[in-house]
Image (cartoon, rainbow, N blue to C red; front, side):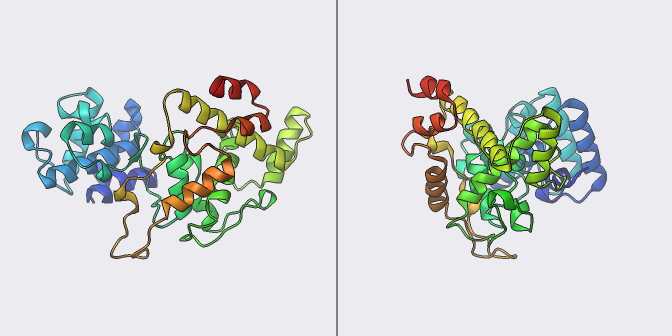
Length: 301
């Protein structure tokens, strides 16, 4: 299994039985389940069981930390929508609602479970998760890559202090848009292309005469169109948040006492994006600036 899967079914569940991790991964791949969400959901279920919120009767079994067999069994139950598996398969947000648990202990953004790149280790990930088009997804803004040394010099995206909130939102927003472009171009995000190389490849294939700045703008259009669609479906600024469990300071490890300032990050992000603070929508002016007049009319009238 790849590393996110290994952590999700392994240490996150306090499970160090590698055979069970491999089996859970195989079952998810065979049946189309996301391994990150599945592992986070199982770990959350174990957490609720430990607190007495989820009972043995409701779960249909004991859910003790480190039980690899239980991890595999729960994946099977999700696949079959069997018993507690049906609720488990709906994710941590729904579980918290159904079981009356503290929603601030459910690790998700907009219903998407949080991956393994901790927002306390990389504050740029905090704003990327909070504002990502499909919730907490490291593939829609893997800013940790920047703060460990990657950069997009052509767009002014450079490594910085990974534990700094002020000034982090603008480069994180730029990187979000840049990485969104990789999806549009069907490019692998693990390959270390420069923006110049991407531009040269695009121009060679299309006959266009784009610049790296044009790529940044194209990615920005994509981000804003997705945001407008989400706004039409009811999304507002209040969903641009991380639950307490994802940002409360830890008392051990390399990030002791550190927590991203979400208020600063969001205000700077919205200002850079030119999104409306009250509604969470891209402003009409910003959409027109991006050549999205039809989207502006549909969103604002």
